[in-house]
Image (tube, rainbow, N blue to C red; front, side, top):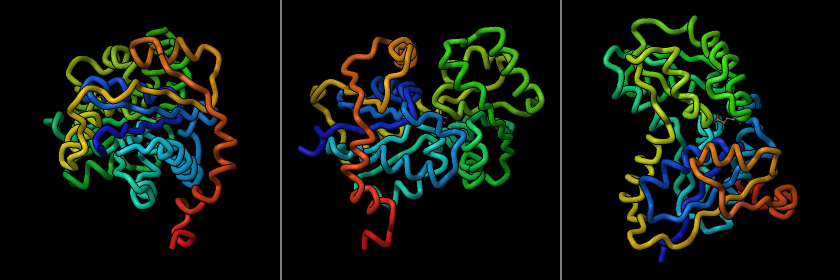
Length: 287
Ligand code: DGL
């Protein structure tokens, strides 16, 4: 039965577990297969071309599991590779940008939002484009915050260094008109409390992962792909490397210990699947 197939989720690392956590809450009957490209993180400092290639390779890994849909948990990959993924993948694919952008519009009375993200996400202008496509009068301020990913991975969620860094990034761009803020990176939901201390209570913080989980649920309903029975299997987690402190960090992102985790020989997978991946990447080869 088609509906029992799992949903595939990928991210540049384990930050995407914040998205998986939300999917688990909203879609308890679905089996989730997660791939974190921990060997090649960060994506947020890389070029569009490379991010597109990585995203296709990550998706190709998930396609092996006969997934019915792919969720791009990584904001950077969602911002830079959605076009190529949508065009080239044989299953429906959704990223985190559009759901986050729509939530920003819903939650902003003053029509001003602030986006925090990696350098590549901010440079892409993807959130701004998605918001202004719905409402051209909306003012969007974007701030890249490249130091936040390593601070979160270090577990310094409210350390004075993190607070200082947040002030340095946000103080110059915050103003009284901004009343919504998109946490435009997998890692930032873990900083929500600290970010709120900097913005004050009147700014609505938007977790793109949470919004995406709703969107995925609606999409599955529309496509008649939702699974209504008991979960067909345990969730599975695959990573391309297991860095030091991985279990601790993973548990923090997921909110519980990580089970069924496996390191895969991703380099070998890429060599073996080279022809298939090149076909996915190149429209000419596919014809
Ligand atoms: N997962 C990335 C994102 O959401 C953050 C980490 C990275 O730079 O790869 O943008």
